[in-house]
Image (cartoon, rainbow, N blue to C red; front, side):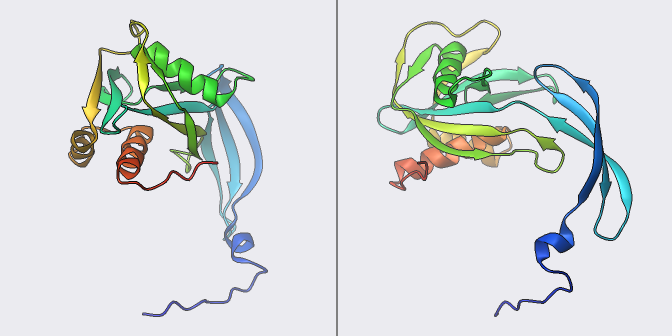
Length: 198
């Protein structure tokens, strides 16, 4: 099958399909989230209101062991979905904080392990249709046990084989977007696929 480009009547596809925001009013805000209502116009002229969530940058870390076969995960309860989930460590970047410092700090606070050889992989938006919630994913190769995890962060900390983590993703037992991407990037790193970070 050969792809065919269909011409559009406006200057560009981007202009033709771009939604226009006529205004946005803040409904509620704190240091972790801002909830707004945006007045939006679709390309066909339909007007509607859309809730918008804006969240500060979060930084997540895929910590692999020295051999690259296991990933460091925490077992925690997420009350919003009322489920327990294995997750990579991560959290909010403090204002002005270097994201690599956030990656190291959060991993150590949540697991008791200090990551080594941190490398930025990429940034992503996990809920792009309704939220501006930028997240950075870092890869660490190796870690040193330096203490206990913070009591509020994890029920358990575990070095999980990447293959087991992948199977848990396929069974719907690992749900967080950052953790899914971390496991897949860990598998790619183990297979020798170079990371695409700077």
